[in-house]
Length: 152
Image (cartoon, rainbow, N blue to C red):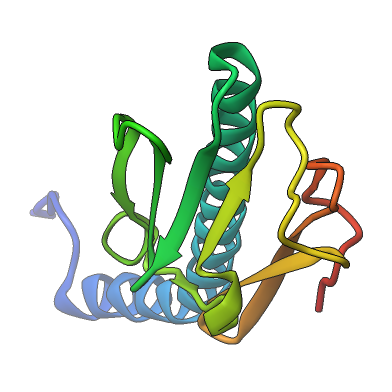
């Protein structure tokens, strides 16, 4: 009399587990790279938005506004009153991204026309995460460029 067996043998289960392990090992580095690129892009957009907010606030309110990038955190304040326009945004905590401006570029002031009067050349902010780099440029006229500044 023949018995019907239901289920899988141990060998079949081990083969499936081994195949799944190989697929996960191949996919993990690619997923990590995609996540890092996405985080870098999101942080770059956040910094560009903060710069645009600072410029807009200066023009709308007719007073100076400052964009501060220090310790991987960005914030926007009105210079005269100290009123907070954008609360501190820690890019390292939110996206794992490092923002390292030059010491002279930690605070960028926009005047009531939206210009950056303290600078004679463009200001570049560099962002890095896991070996990936990107940058944001701000011209003397206050124009924010997040594409084509420096990208490697």
